[in-house]
Amino acid sequence: MSTKISIDLGNLKVKAKTGGVKPLMLPSRFALLEDVEMVDMKGDKLDLNTYEINNMVYVWGKDIHKVPAEKCLTTLGYDDRYVGEEFQIMVKIVLAEMLHKNKVNRNVIVATGVPSSEMNTILEEQISEAFENDGKPHEIIRNGKSIFITVDECHVITQALGTGYNEYLDQEGFIANDEMEEIKIGIIDIGGGTTDCDLIYNLRHQKNPFSIDRGMFSIYEGIATQINKDRPKVKVTPEEIEDCFKKEVYTVKKGDDINFTTIKIKLLEKLARDIITDINRKWKKKEQLSFIFLTGGGASVMAEYIAEDFDNILVVENSEWANCYGFYAFLMNLVDETDGE
Image (tube, rainbow, N blue to C red; front, side, top):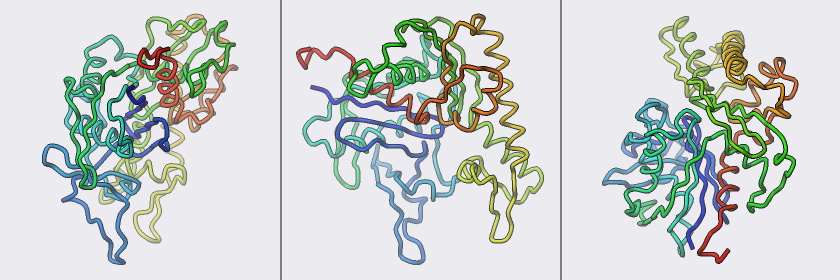
């Protein structure tokens, strides 16, 4: 029997879940070991694991955010993202991290997601290929120990639909909310690189979902651009803005803080207006929707800017996890012939 694992490999964050292991959420970036100072002047070592892949050694783990952004390799990308070396390395690292404790079964079934606009395109095929690896095992040496992981199947659904499964099913794959069988809902998934909008009528995924090619990264990038325009020598990165986004203050050095509240609000309002405009144009019967679920990593911060235009917005609980948990619920709901079901 194959192990089931859900992986939401976003532009900014990786989320992964499988049975018997604590769910994982870390930045979607890693670094070459040779580029990282693992020990500081006090003798404290960064909490990072090593992964040897194709004779190159990379690091990733709880302290990856402490590695300067310019030293990191990122999976952020668009048209060629899934065939890029960085994405494919990230896939192997996440699989190894989630399964290294599993000594019995390293044959897995994966569920993952893509933006709505990428379904039924070559991009859907490319992400499947990145996980399935032509049927060959992924070979990784994690912290000096070899791991071989074979992905038997890779199921790809829209990221927003992951939230639909999260609301409908529990984590064992059983129905938790049968009300969804008789209502029409909308889903707005504000992620790192895109905002995805889907409709589900009586559990039926509707045609013509759409994506906006902007998400929270565009906000971080916009703030960084404005700061660097005002103070060119600062050279702040979007990743650094993400780390201090809630505080709304970027510290250049002790005693030198830059408050970016004004530009933050301006950019959030602009993204909200773009989302609302597209929805008003493309969701012709939105008055028939019982709920519009707001989900994704940007849901909580964007809620106040979007809710004023809709009276049926619901911010999904644990919205940053909703897609990943939904992918897992989807897998658990599948009829597994090897289980005799």
